[in-house]
Amino acid sequence: VSSPEINFNIAADYEFDVSANWMTRLHLDANYVDDQWFSAYNDTVVEGLGDYGEIQQEGYWLLNGRITLADSTDRYAVSLWGANLTDEEYDIYGINLQSGFGFNYFMEGAPRTWGVELTYRF
Image 1 (spheres, rainbow, N blue to C red):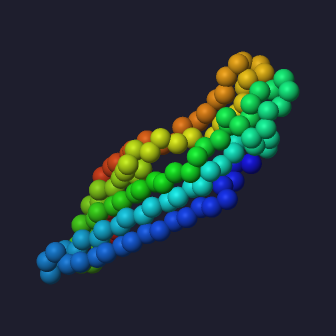
Image 2 (cartoon, rainbow, N blue to C red; image 1 turned 30 degrees about the vertical axis):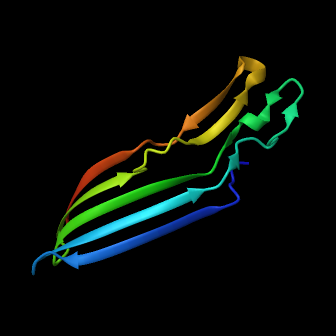
Image 3 (cartoon, one colour; image 1 turned 60 degrees about the horizontal axis):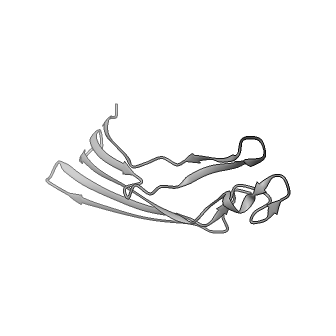
C-alpha cells in the first residue's frame, strides 16, 4: 500500500569560479515515483465499498534545482532554489470514502515552490 514498485533519483552538481573570491554552484535533481496504490484492495471493486481502482497515483517526475553564489571561504552564500519546477500535479495520499460520503479524498503534493536562502557561517 502506497509503496511504488520503482523510485528513481538522479542528481548533478557543477561548481565554477566567478572570480578569485567567488564561486557558483549549480545543482539539479530529478525524482521519479512509479504508479502507486493508496488502498490494499488495489484495482478491485469491493461490494458496498466502491471502486478501489480509482485510489491510485500514476507515475510522475519531480524536478528540483538550486543555484548558489558563495565566497571562496564558503562563509557567505546566497542561493536561489526551486522545487517541483515543472509544477507537476500529483497526489501523496488517497482514501476511498465512497461508502460513507460518496467521494474519494486525495491529498495533493506540493506545487512549484521557490525561495532564497542566505547563509552566514561563523
